[in-house]
Image 1 (tube, rainbow, N blue to C red):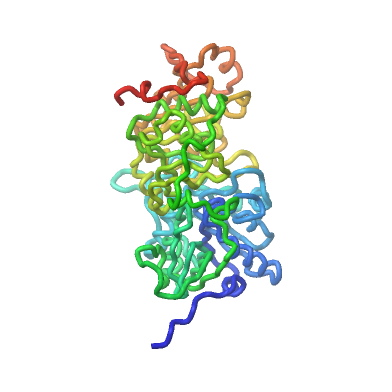
Image 2: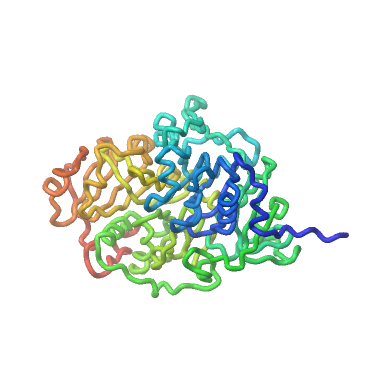
Length: 510
């Protein structure tokens, strides 16, 4: 029997068949699983020949941790006609975002889980995804349908009714080419992910492309002979992969060549994690952590909540709770908490599942409590994390988490930025306070100066820091109406002390 032809080719050869006007799906998350060689080869081809032009670029999570990498490279004039993303760009305004703001690229922001659901529908030749996720938010056609500018007129989502209940229908997007990344491929295209600190939707992206007669291109660190991989380790079978591009210089994450503690090959000593100084953010995290209970599974989001594992270490309770993130990583110490620059990873993880599976779990409410950051909020308890003037970070997994999980703790530092956080009306609704109250969710907003809860009256002040005068320091400068509880409590003094809180005692028997 003749040997199978190898699927290993150069990046230049791999991107050559991509046609103008086609749809390209791109995997990765920030500096994790970034198919950088493939993106750079595509952009180089465009620079040399002017093609492919006018493509639709589809990414559940933006890739590239710094400007000049990943998704930010798609800002070349004429390369992208339409972009559909679960997150766009977290900091600053790269050329891509400037072109979206200038109505030169049509653009849509849908939540990560919705994006995966659209891919899953495409992979099964279904017309689209039906879900409640996004109702009452910017994704709802009543609030813009996820469109980010005036030229984004495609009807990608619509309201429907099933058995008297409202839902959203998101249309499946046919994928012509998928860029994915793994650690190892054999020459037949079977892919393993043993050095990847997270797995970012590679399988469903490949399935969506193949269902449409498209191509799947995988970037890997190493290539081995066909038939030498453990089949239980293969997450994407070679039957779904058309081309393999080897990049021996592939880094595990942007700033790290390889850290074995991110994939369970070695362990990071929790005692080596730097203790955070007693600052406003630490006060916020301590008070927020009082909302947890022993044995809880806790989801943490981008920003201040990412440092919660460091609080658990200082309190000696890291083994009493389990942290997880939307990227599918369970357990351990988040990259931020350990002093790193990358959020979608954890040192000493207990499990790594595909982020597509994780977002379904979040939407189904399988988490005890979620800790999330805040961009801006208003008196109705609404929150915006997706758009601020010209900046368009996008919402990521925020909408799935805040609509599916029953207990949410929003964490943010006020400092002298009260007017920047509190708005008469948020620019874009990522979290709808009134809808959450009707669903019966328990919503708490924690700052270093005060704690608020979501009640029938909207945002309600319930706790204050020692010495904080809400009328002098808050009410006079906040443009929105905030209700004040009849019996204001004082935040626990342990939140402000230099010594650890002894959180086990404060949790009590809970």
